[in-house]
Every structure is written in C-alpha cells, then in structure tokens.
Amino acid sequence: MFTITSWNVNGLRAAFKNKANQWWEEYDPDLLCLQEVRARPDQLTTVQRESLEQRNPVWNPAEKAGYSGVATFAKTEPAGTEIGLGIPRFDSEGRVIQTILPGTRIFNIYFPNGGRDLSRVGYKLDFYQELLEICDQLHNDGEKVIIGGDFNTCHQYIDLKNPKANEGNTGFLPEEREWIDIYLDHGFVDIFRHLYPEKEQYSWWTYRGGARERNVGWRLDYFLISEGLVDQVEDVIIHDQVMGSDHCPVSLLIDLE
Image (tube, rainbow, N blue to C red):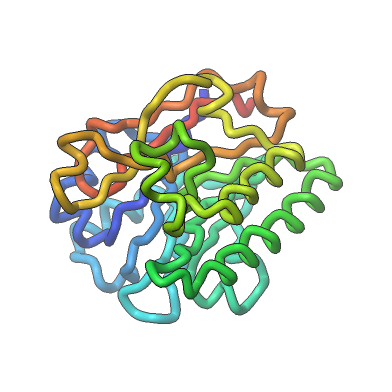
C-alpha cells in the first residue's frame, strides 16, 4: 500500500518549531506533500535540512520571499518530477510539484486563495481552468492522475461548519465550488466524499475564536483522483487530531503496484 500525505504547514519553519515534523517522521508516508512552506532549504537549520534530505526532496519556492511554496518528499526516488504547470503567471508563486510514477502522476498543489477582498478570485479560477486542461490531456494520453493539496475551496455544505454565513466569502463562493463540480465531470472523484458521503470532518480551522477547540472548521484539503484509481483506494484519513498548523494532514492509502 502506498501512502500519500498532504499537509498545508502554514510555514515550514513554524511547523518545525511546532514539532509537526515529529508526526510525519513517525507516520512515515511514501510521499509527503507540503504546501505553503514559505521557505527555501537554505533558510532551515542544518538539522532540519538534513532530516528532509533523506527523503528525496523536491522544492518549488515562490519568487516572493516568505510566500506560498510547495515541497514534496519521497521515501523512494520517483521515476520523475516536474516543477510547476509551465505557465509563468502561476509558476512564479511556487504552487505545483508533479511526481511521476509508472502510469500515475501525483500533483502536490497549493491552490490560490481568492483573498478577503475577493481580488484574487479571477486568478484562482484561471488556475483551476488551466490545471484542468492539463489533466484532461493527461487522461487522454492514458495517464491516471492524483491531485492532492490545499484546494482553498469547500465543495458542499457538509464541508464546512457554517455554510450559510460563508456564502459570500472566498473558499465557498458559488463560482469556486462549481469548479470542483467541473473536475468531477471530467473523470475525477473526491475520494474522501466518495468513501464517506455523510461524514462531517474538517481539515482547516481559523486561529481566531477557539475555532479548532470547537471544531468550527472547513474541509479545504482534498484528494481528487482519476475514476480508474477508485478501486485501488484503501482509505482516506483526515488526521484532525494532529497539531502543528492551522491545517491538519490528510492521507490517501492506495495500491499503486
């Protein structure tokens, strides 16, 4: 069984300070996909950097210091990796790493946030569209695809605690939610919701107002997988008891042999 863990760490240096690394070192997934790392390798301590260098690291920091960025760590060196989408307006923000395994491509993605003032919603929706065109081509070429990461969108009312109060906020706008529907119409499955159609479980909580203690959260972290992979999935686990970030890790257990 192959385990893929996705986690928005809200700053990798902060994650180390919060001892989040102790969890992933113990859990030891085959592929660890981190988002919003907000750091380059040379900004870590020697001990931190050495602990990650054992895991075949691939880094994609944003051009802007202290912003965005993703990193992927593999127990076994994969067949290949690709950085970004090949689209400069998105790749400058360090949002994508592709890990290539035989017959399957795994995307580690930190999707854009629409912004409190909604000024980045258009950019975010453009990102969804461009990524889908790439995935459509991969499907046409016979590849199976796993998209894991922080989608910065809740799909359905069940995916957040207070849906009515958030209908005008980014992350739950109708035009954002519609893009999840479009992906599902293009051969993808939200595998957590497929396995657990009625389960109310979240992966992000604001730091304000004791939201996590009260479990007032959002499910923002997803695995969308090609329909052809569904029968190979053993489970999806939202590790909502794991601390270290305002997000918790989410793991996909899948047979990729």
